[in-house]
Image (cartoon, rainbow, N blue to C red; front, side, top):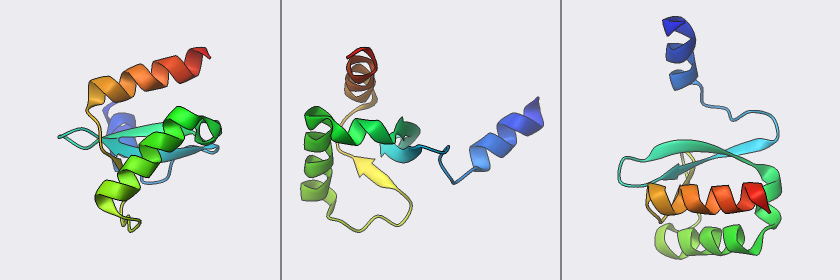
Length: 80
């Protein structure tokens, strides 16, 4: 089991149909369904990221919010 967790920690590609984002001061990695890109609330978060960090992302998209706020948004999107 430890080998699976270790391999998952090293995985760089998101699951099929998902993309990776990094959130919070610890830069925690989340895999988000591509379908969330259609949601205006998520689009606004991406626009905020572009305003704050620009469009160059070498290791993934960094979102300018804390982990708690991001989890609330993901929970909302999952339920609606």
